[in-house]
Image (cartoon, rainbow, N blue to C red; front, side, top):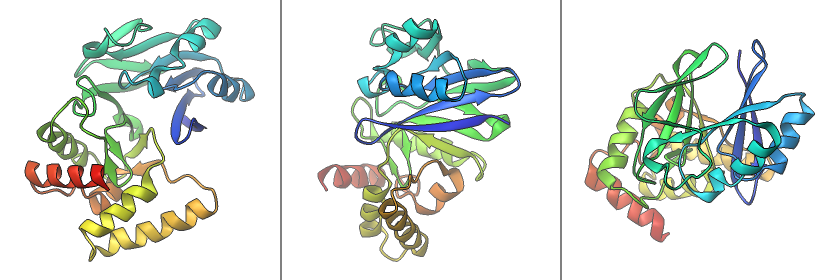
Length: 240
């Protein structure tokens, strides 16, 4: 079984450490900064051999250089954004495979938040790292792409098995949930989830990972029936 460790950094980012006990390999996913990530690995006796980047934003790649300097790790990221991530050793695109031990992750292109955004889907482990494309009850802002692209992303991700664990990169759930209630005020699943999230945050607990099943029931962007509806919801959330 793969182990996944959550490392909270900056104001609301999560960096993920993915560890395979069988091979003793460790991957850092979207390291915004280096020191807390290196410390978390060292505390467990792990050595970071790889970094997987989902997109070029600084709060996802800011720790690349220092982690590589400390460990000699191999850094993988989207081919379409190689010009914006100077630390990459390997570029990948749709359908490519990266591995941690005997566990394979397939690259899925999910442009919209950034033009070359990718996700890493470990189908055999029912895990996906989605960066800033899908959040708990939310989706990423459309900085470099379109509502049509994000609508396609939501449909593609919704087609994954319900039990797939979704590891996103920010703690945005409470804000997303409160907004979702204004869009679907009669959705009992959303209301129940927001209440649970509010209680968790009062206790200082994280609310991710989420799951595809939870998102299908409570994510208003995944539940949008058309590109136009998603666009309207995204614009309203941006203005909220």
